[in-house]
Amino acid sequence: MWKENLYQPVEVLTRKHTKFPIDEHQHSFFEMVYVQSGSGSFYVKEGDFKVQQTNYKSHALFLIPPDTVHRFTIDTHCEYIFIRFTPHYAADYLGKQIEQSLYTSLKQCAITLDEKDTTIVRSLFRHIGQEASHTRKYSNYILQQWLNSILVIVAGHFMQENSAEYTSASIEPDKAMYLLQYIQQHIYQPELLKTKALCKKFNMASTYVGQYFKQHFQEDLQQYIIRNRLKIVENLLTDTTMSIKEIAAKMGYTDSCYLVRTFRCHYKMSPLEFRKKQLQQDLS
Image: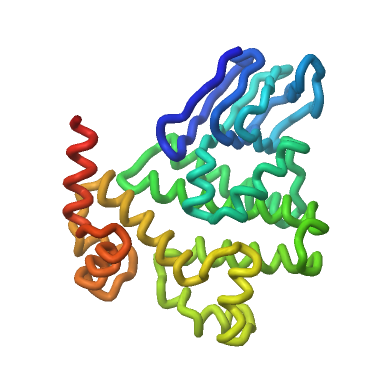
């Protein structure tokens, strides 16, 4: 059986099919599938048995975990958006708790969100489709932020459905995921992510907000924010020719010197040394 691999952390594909080109197959990565238009059926196979058989139509959403044998068939012409990402991508950008919750889709790959989240996700996928069709200089970073927002919403859906597995009250996963989504949304605005600002936004005591985040995501709040911001800096260093000063301004650092100190503390090298090292690896 064919098994697809992914050679980058994340990939966005838009496809139009009258007949789905691949029979039963599996991936070594997560694949999120959004049906923009059309209809058909989907199933997961375990051994010789078809499970999770689902008919789909426009706006259907699927999350297929790694190593899941599955197949799409088409009844009427379909337009899809495929978002493929590695488990490491989810863990690195959103945390281990989010990555683990996404594996819940093993139970049911077809996702049914509530009305509010459905509206948000449809809008995000519409933007993703448009951006993927007309790429710009910073398209990769725009797409990444929209993808992260969708993943947070979907992970929140799984956490809510499986709230018995979490120690907090059933309403807590929603609040925790909203905090995470807020951080992702404002990752370029560090002043909004300071402890004092988050306490005011979420009506929490300054001594509790960090404890609350760690309780739900098993990570230190400020380290999580720093790590996410540096991941974006890392991508800007490797994928653009932006200067350190330009990157610092884009990411909301007070000045380029502060960015260099922070980067060196975590990577044991300067941003320019990192860029040079990555370029040498790409050429080798």
